[in-house]
Image (cartoon, rainbow, N blue to C red):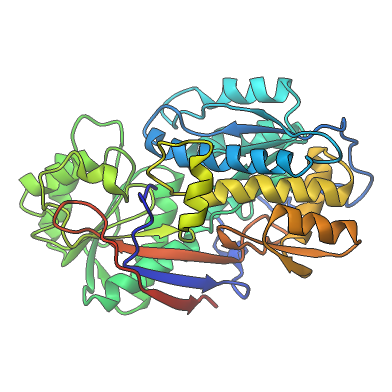
Length: 425
């Protein structure tokens, strides 16, 4: 989920307004009606409190800096513009850890005790599933910048869960189409076993088979990311002799690739495709030079422009990776706009207004410009630094951007850029 400097090889812009994500969700029975649909929403206390539930520790800690920076920049700029409902936004930072730790729950307890109206996070779908019920039952908005599991679309979240990252229905299709376009029709999939890995593996696999390709083995091979080695799973894929391999994982991916190299199915023997959970320059630091050359990978999100990177540097001067910074920023901005539109900072009021401030109104792309329109009693359609958001009534973005990247001989992402529009129907 990290891509320093957003080095682009190919970008697929996805307008998914016609996609019915609910058909692909694997969660609980639908319970996503707007808060307050059958009565008044709760009253806020007049101060918008934003908490973060983002990775400072665990196997996604490398993703934390850009996400924290995005949240902090948004709050800084909101407060410089006058705050929300006449008061500065209050920010409380929190660590999510990963799905193998018990960090998220005590963090959520602390944030709820501090009366957080919105909690930005988690990054990991697996972590989010461990706390979503607690957060939404408290009447607090849970707003993830990086959750991509399709199961959230139909999850019984009381209408309080949102995300600025697109479902893996989108990423899986774009990556699968890229693999087929590259001429690989016999695909092996190695994936960590958690909701994120299972969902993305399913969507990549269905795109490959739906496009005339085959999976070899005939299903994804899953592994425990906390395992001491991954030789058994790598050898299982090797025995099937695929033409290329998709690796879906997090920080442990470097160890998996080392096992692949030792088994003779490394990226220089079999074309390798990565995903948002392991794509980035940090991956190559633990591998011999040249191992990743030619490897491609997918990452949802718009390019972090030079102007946006300079703004991020005002809160984190040492920031070098920018993955999901824009999505984190936009989660905070849209939450603030929703509170202003509602005239109420409670989580329920914000949730009721969130879809509306991202669609069907007059376009605006900065907090200040959007506020000016709201003050003129106009409906707004915020298009953010992460791109058009267009939140559905189920909390999913229906417009998104997915980039396809490749590595150079120094194990770093190359700096070439190519934009390719695409649509999901």
